Image 1 (cartoon, rainbow, N blue to C red):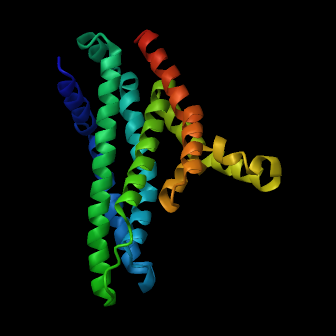
Image 2 (image 1 turned 135 degrees about the horizontal axis):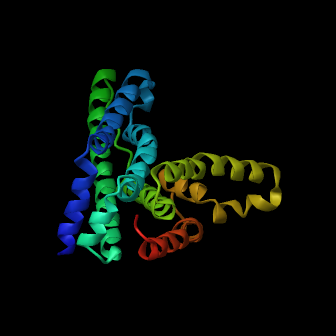
Image 3 (image 1 turned 180 degrees about the horizontal axis):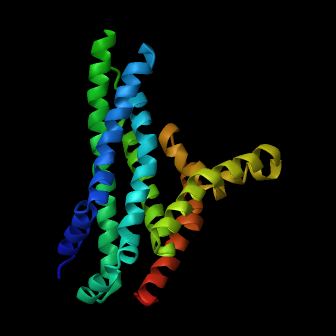
Length: 247
């Protein structure tokens, strides 16, 4: 069975249930709602491509990792893993196909968000009577795509670690909401941790992809923090998936 067919199957699994369909549809729905909110409530000077991209990107940064989580954990929560791993006994190929399908969805979602934001920018500028402001470069867009790809990989990592939809989703919200507050509070009150935070706080390092020009040091901090919080746990989770009994 070729890898392209496996990837196609995994993509179809993301869409062919009611829950999966509406979760995928939420990408477009969120993009449209965020764009409409900017047009209605943002001041005239804030009607720029960057504003629309930021407004759309924040909710998508929550939705996309959940899609990645469910693509892995559904094999266990819906008990389809017995069939999947019987048809394709080497689980590494299945997990590779899941990761590729997840990344394809993430990149496609970013281009949909860019298109919706561009349309909103044109409409908003026409309503306000101002010239459209295109203030996002190709490099900035690439950084935004990378940030969301890392977020989806984090979802996949949690999926293979927990192999439970509820546990992985709770783990994601702890990672994305609780840990940043804890690290931020520690950095605010402990001077020794202030310089250490960018090296150990992966959310802090990834957020820089959205709003700062990345320097060599920032890329190093991103690499170290993702190694600790993403790549090592992902390797451990994949090892567990390859060795664990499927029930």
